[in-house]
Image (cartoon, rainbow, N blue to C red; front, side, top):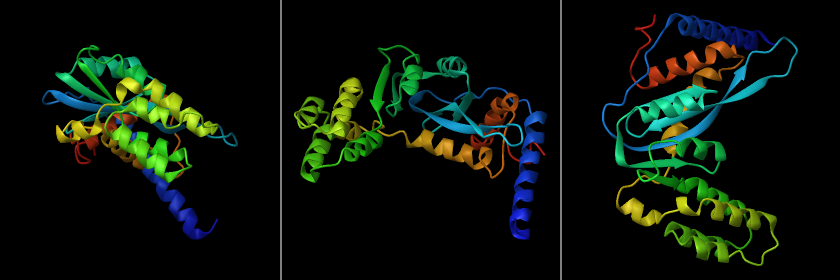
Length: 244
């Protein structure tokens, strides 16, 4: 290890030690949204657990939820706590709930409010990304994209009928599974109804900028408090001077 690399590592470790001190020092209340939530998105992030010297790193998932235009929260191994928190907030009579295709995300969303109140939307950008992973004829992919943009799921599925391409077959299954979550995206955009989950993805990236600093490993007993602290900072509820 060069002197520069050693100095950089020491600086990262110093930052991690400061964060750990703050985590143990602060006790923060759960946040509350300021106005009725019109849209929210849910996604998952990862954090590295502390392991014994010489052992392989262990990464564990946490779930994050962003109330669009308002605040974000993150919970470690506590989906029930996340669901309880959002259901205690003031939600619109037509709350738009966005996510990608992972079952764990929709298992959470399906517990938010009531089915009649929820507008479940599969993130358009993930849908489009998965479409182009199928490969093959660009003309076909463009045609399917046009169908999906307008919510024509049946027609999109039919475009891949008869293909032996495993990716195409998997994409058909993906569309069938999420058919009720694929709206007329063009209409939603015109009505200014959110069609993307970028808000929660941005939240997770901002959380990662702290919890994934080089060399950082976290005691599993401190992770929940760390996530709460980081979200409070990002929400503007605290500043570094507040907790210094």
